[in-house]
Amino acid sequence: MYRYPDNFIKLYEKSFRRNAELPALSLYGEQGTMSYLRLAANIARAHILFQNLGLRRGDRVALYAKDSDVWVEAFMAVITYGATVVPVLPDFTPEDATNILNHCEAKLLLAGDQLFDKLDFKKLKHVEAVLSLIKPGMLAAKDPAKVVRLLERLGDDFQKMYPQGFTADDIHYRQVDNNSVIVLNYTSGTTGFSKGVMLTGWNLAGNVVFGLRSGLHFTRSRVLTFLPLAHAYGCAFDMLTPLAAGSHITVLGRTPSPAVLLGAFAEVKPHLILCVPLVLEKIYRKRILPAMSEPKVRRMLAMPGLRHLVYRKLRARLTAALGGCFKEVVVGGAALSTEVEEFLHSIKFPFTVGYGMTECGPLISYTTPRQFIPTSVGRTLPEIMETRIDSTDPQNIPGEVLVRGQNVMKGYFNNEDATQAVMDKDGWFHTGDMGTRNPDGTLFLRGRCKSMILSASGQNIYPEELEARLNDMPFVAESLVVDRGGKITALIYPDAEALESRNIPADKVELLMEKIRAKVNSRLAPYERIAAVEIMKEEFKKTPKRSIKRYMYI
Image 1: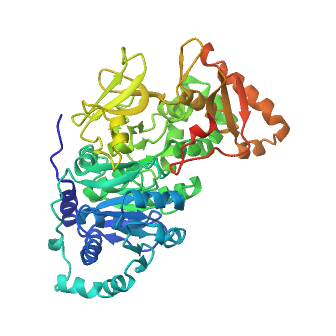
Image 2: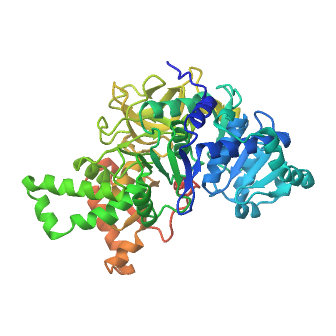
Image 3: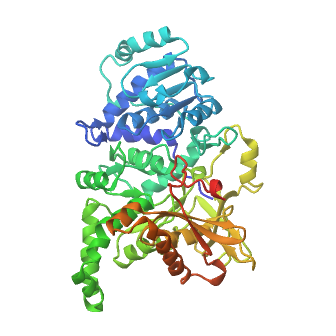
């Protein structure tokens, strides 16, 4: 197994020096762009403050704020100092955020003012000081007078350190061993369930160097980041890889609704688009389906000789909607709708689906759009990752996906029991996902081990596959398939907007859902057919990562 030899932190020292005069960061909708030299100068200023505060290598520094250019700057300042950064999702409740901050023993907290206002500083056991990421200043501290004094003299300290002004030659970062924990990423904040994924320099270098060598980002390429940067997916490929390449990152910094995203795509014109399935699915339903429903277009689609012309126009329309300059769209984080995937493949749209987990920082498998096999999640990363299926026939009989290689985490912070539960003695990480694998390493996922349902006849039923079919149906916003006393039951939250647009009254929704159940069942094997439907009056409860809390409905 090959290990990329690059020292992770030194990647950024080299990049910031080489690209000093190039644009590094912008905040969408705001004036001004931060160059790489300005970014490095701000990082140097932060390093002086960290040192004066007594921060040591390996100390945990938490980020609890909404995405912004300053968030990126703070993240990079922490890791290039030699401390460990702990990104806390702003969607976590104050209670969960407090649990995380205490569990990771964070010494310093960099926070958004409004988010910090909801916390009780007295309950933060290890935090010495809280600094604002919104405007320079202190929000709280155990020794406030000391922190205020250090902040007031920071400008003078910076001037003394760099009397001739800060230049590219001054960009120099500590030699941080690649075995050191760089990022501590929490998958849950609940007391008793907090699992901090320890990602080392090796883990992150495996992801970033793969991204660089694959040409995902390059010098002067444009990036629009709208995935949460506290997630491993957005962090690795919308921030860390672009900064190592010398790209220009524009942080969306607001809720990525279709209208906002389409405006940002048109303005930024990104060269690569990373997204979750929901983004493409919404654009497909709001921009493409209406066009395909026009009588003239339907007639042309029915004629084989004209179909390719329609597909070419639809591809051009979708490409233009996404800015027109990207070479590929990478989908990850969840399963892509079968309907949308089939459509994108039929019009030869340049998309691919990858697979990863926080515990792998995140990438496990990926292939280019040209090599991508529909319904797969790409091929296991060559050289740095291995996969195998815990099955007697890995290509045909689903089993748990096991992963081993450079990207696999060091373990869960202060949670040896949880670490041992997923890491076996041979170094294989047990993902909890069920799937099959081709001999070339291409993976096909079926669902989560824990959610699999065993039918009365002994057949395995994967709820995620049934949910994907249901979610493809009109008037279904989201669904969950569960076992109710031996009966496969679909919990469906209807699409209120779609029902209203078609003037369907509330008393007709139950009959409509029964018709949907029958239609879906006509495409299923007898053992996996849905026996009943329960209509949900409210959206499903979600985690901060927007996954349905399945356990609440079983």
